[in-house]
Amino acid sequence: MRIGLIAMSGIRVRDEELVRVGLTLPGFVERSLTIASLPSLGLLTLAALTPAEHQVEYIEMPDIALFDELPDGFDLGAISSYSAQIDEAYELAQRYRERGTKVVIGGPHVTVVPEEALQFCDSVVVGEGEPCWPEVIEDAKAGRLKTVYDARKREYDLAAAPMPAYDLLDIENYNRLTVQTSRGCPHRCEFCAGSILLADHYKQKPIAKVLAEIDKIREIWPHPFIEFADDNSLVNRSYWKELLTAMIPRHLRWFTETDISVAEDEELLTLMRRAGCAQVLIGFESPVVDGLAGLELNNDWKYKRFACYREAIGRIQAHGVTVNGCFVLGLDGHTTAIFDEVYEFVRASELYEVQATVLTPFPGTPLYERLKRDGRLLEPTNWKKCTLFDVNFVPAKMAPEELTRGFRKLIARLYSDEFTAQRRESFKKNLRQFHGEKGGGV
Ligand code: B12
Image (cartoon, rainbow, N blue to C red; front, side, top):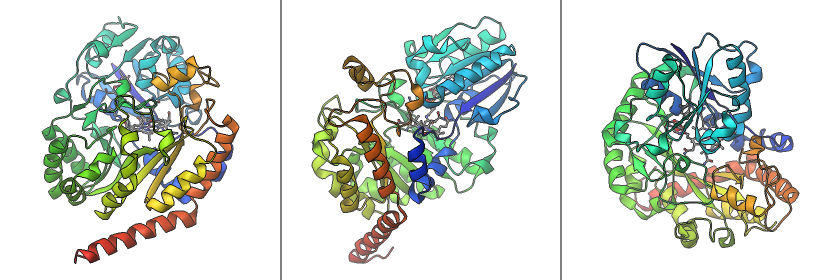
């Protein structure tokens, strides 16, 4: 068979005014351009599990309107999409089906609403792709595709993970490549639409496999920039100390998403820096404690750590690792004062980088269910608004328009030339000071 692996990709923001005020700002543009070029690790992984008798082609589809002529001639189209672009994925699926190509869709969105997806495609894979993909291929070849393949009924061990088919990529098009070390997260934040939608417990890939993936990337890109595609990387410290030690001689630069507990371990921070960590992205979520209560559903983990936010940022950045602090605007505790509060926190904490987003009810999250129950969803199935930048709910302590307007203004302030330059300068100054005090030099 000829199989088209199609990644719906690119960045989405629906609020045109926000695009106008935000997308010209250096801080915003930089991060958008960087992440917009990430490939679909999910599809590269499935490519690796496809028996050699089949031909696979990897295609990125940032906007279906850009393709007058769709890449054609496939027996099977395998589409990967998140919520924000799912409408386009469905349209694409229909266009392929009209040409007689069978279509299977996977990813976190269709995992939550398989029945919706089946109106547009032949088959849906629910949950992680790996345990089902060989069967999907076999069934497609035999002309007997099932409508639903459900991986959640099968335990998948990352020890069985194949080497992603990085060699399918034209490396010239990418400024970062992704490697995954873990799925899931020990915390249960109400709004999280990450890999906990796929994997119900935290699991890690064996270190040897992670290193083999890194080495494979180094064959095509000698000093790569790696983004770990984990929702919360560094929670298992003994695992990471071993991995980091092995990464040091490999001369990498890398970025990852984790939680604030990294700041508790000096040895870990030192190893991170030595192993080439450029930045950690941490979900602080709120600069005021009101927004945090009840947000993490297991034991209010983030609420309990609020008091050490600033000190933790200082400690991580003193190791030469920049912190990208994430704030979610519109949490139930937030009033219209929150916009100034975020700005003030970012200024005072001297965060190098900041990511402000609006609270987004993604399907399948406890947040979505709660807001739906309370009649607070504005357009419950308008998935186009699942961008993290578009308001689609009624906040508890302000009007939706107040959140939209306040957010636009905050974006303009946070990412202005002046404030961005100021934060970067403080980082360098503090680092010089810290190393000066220790008698080192940067
Ligand atoms: C890399 C990444 C991207 C890349 C995606 C590249 C691509 N085409 O896949 C880029 C930069 C393009 C991107 C864009 C966006 N992203 Co993004 N991104 C991530 C990130 C950091 C890692 C994802 C990853 O690589 N996971 C690892 C792979 C192995 O998992 P996977 O893709 O889910 O695939 C597995 C299964 O889902 C399944 N599967 C997936 N597809 C298919 C297809 C088939 C046929 C089958 C059988 C199985 C299958 O099998 C795979 C293996 O098990 C996550 C956050 C995180 N830390 O995880 C956010 C994340 C996925 N992104 C998110 C969001 C919101 C966005 C944007 C909307 C942001 C924006 N405003 O533009 C856009 C999406 C716009 C769009 N085009 O739709 C959310 C998604 C929430 C949701 N449920 O929709 C996440 C979880 C971040 C978050 N915390 O909210 N993103």
